[in-house]
Image 1 (cartoon, one colour):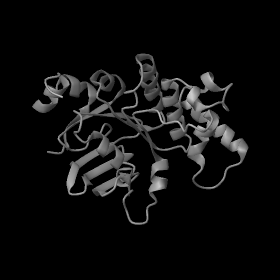
Image 2 (cartoon, rainbow, N blue to C red):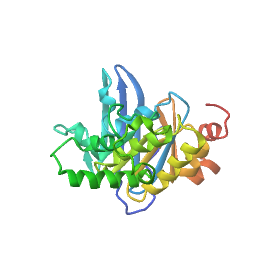
Image 3 (cartoon, rainbow, N blue to C red):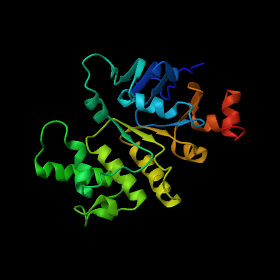
Length: 263
């Protein structure tokens, strides 16, 4: 029942692509046989009812699924044409190139704002302080947070509002310069103002990154994404350009979910 991968531009190579991906929890599959491609500089929304496999699939795209005891993945995930699950591939390096922001803001509580952003740079060669300063400033600007925190970089990150903390987590993820940004319900714990700032940020970030966002909010998916993929009971049911998915979906299950008849 898996849908064929969507190509928005005929000659564009996917930045990231899953092929016949199945993610297992022991003997139970969380998602089954998913084939889906993500083009550069696009936002793809993953939608579907709770427990349908969206977050499991997302974690499989940067090898975080395997951190769960007894979890494994079959199939392939290609980043710029290279299988991230191939023998000898360092998962930590994969996660630098495919960064992830979680549902609840997760600033490191004992670190300052500056230290939180710089924490993403600790893997690999030690950088000069001037270079770290420049990267921290760039990441905070990309996360639309610099103007709000530039005069208190060495204060606790916990002094920030929930929305600011989430944008700080985005900045921390952007500091190592990933190619892909995974967002797992990034506005679920935020108030409407904080959620709106994150949505505005997503629009800006797709200029430089491939963005994949899990959301239960149909209006949010319609607002922020170029492509929408609908998951149900561990399967990818349908994928297409967001305007088409929300007006003329091809599958009855997709239409029923989008119109609120279940989920």
